[in-house]
Image 1 (cartoon, rainbow, N blue to C red):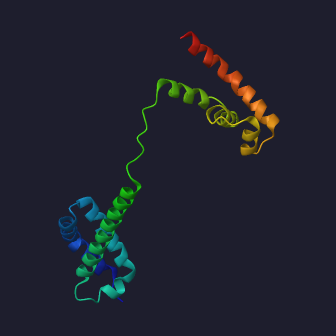
Image 2 (image 1 turned 60 degrees about the horizontal axis):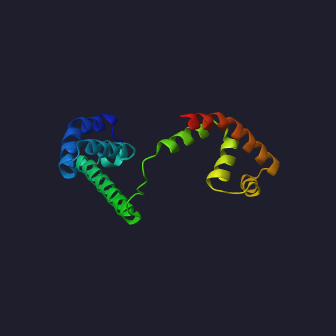
Image 3 (image 1 turned 90 degrees about the horizontal axis):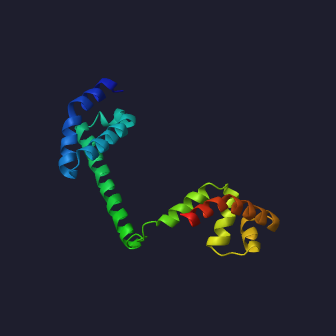
Length: 161
């Protein structure tokens, strides 16, 4: 059974060299350091076997280069997938009114906020709002009434501005 001293020697003697090789292949030293560290962590549980190989450093280097290839594939596949989705939605910048509305709604309790948004912004009648939120119509009316009362001073400020 090989000892840990050999593993430490391999790490100390080859880490920087393997990082340089992987950096040259991949073009990114930070990524090279990551994959080489990953390769050494994969070496630990199988050191008993790899230590008998003619070139344990070659084993680590091979693992690191395969990990680098996997990362490149994942990145490329991610770009391809994003390309299939098309460009992101071009949303206009928020207006002062929309910011004010968001700020006013944020001051309401969640239950009241849900009722206001569904009723006023989506145009649902109170029965539909109550059904969607799984609450009684009376509770829906009460929350809407409390929300109106809380929003009234904010709306009055805007009228005077």
